[in-house]
Structures are given as structure tokens and as C-alpha cells.
Amino acid sequence: MPYTESLSVDVREVPEMHVAYVRHIGPYKGDTKLFGRLFNKLFAWAGARNLITPQAKVLAVYHDSPEITDESKLRTSVCITVPEDTQVNGEVGKMTIPGGTYAIGHFEIDDTGFEDAWNSIYGVWLPGSGYQPDDRPAFEHCTNDPKEHPEGKHLVDIYVPVKPL
Image (cartoon, rainbow, N blue to C red):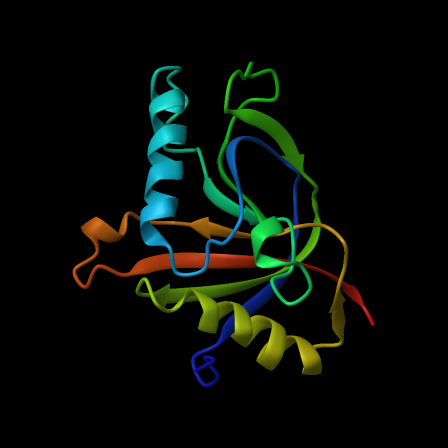
């Protein structure tokens, strides 16, 4: 069920970010083990290169809409922000997340709340906001380790690229 009363969304300019990533193609909805494996692979790579710092942001980028794209072709990338000149190899790629105007929804959710959080931004907030989505990728910024939260919850900011109607 989408969040309505407690929905908190800011619209602001976000600078571009350089990220190292591990990509998955295929279904991902509700698959916490998949995300665990992807992040473990990324963190092992980043840790060996001293890239896990207090300034580093952990993101999940969604390249396709599950409403339009066949589940077997959905692309998602788990990411960590890195310096622009970082070298990557093997399963780890590098990309730039474009800067610009984003609507940012703030959520405290458990493993089952991600779909409702996304639906809240797109289905509740966006229709009356005066904005429409643009063609940059949307992403999640995970701001905590849920294992350290007293209730095991994720503190997540969902970034939706927007432009005026």
C-alpha cells in the first residue's frame, strides 16, 4: 500500500556522480538474496581498493521500468560512488549518473516496502506535483545498514529524475 500521510519528498538539483557498479539483468523484485550477492561482490571489489569511505554513497540504479520492460530484460546496477579516474575491470563497470533535478522521497522501510515506496512517488506524489519524469535513470540511495537499525529497516532515498510539466 503506497505511503500517503508520511510521504516526504524534496525536489532539488543533484550533481552528477561517478559510480562503480555490478549489473544484473533479469527479475529482481523482492529478491533480497540477489541484492545481497550483488552488493557483496561490489563491496569486496571496492574494499580491496580502499573505496569504501564515509563519503561514498551506495546506490541501486534501475535502468528500465518494470511496467514496460519484460521482467527477463530488466537491468539494475548496484553502485558505489568513486573518484572519476577509478579503474574498473571484470564484472565491475563504471558509469556516470547524470546530474539535474530530482524528486527525492525519504523512506524507512523493511525488505517488503520497496515497491510501495516507489509506487508512492510515482502514483501518489508525482501526479499532483507539477513535474513529470524525464529520461535519466531513477535510483535508490541506501543511507544505512539495516542490520544496524533497531527494527532492521532500510533508510532509503528514492531519486526520480523530473522536469516541469
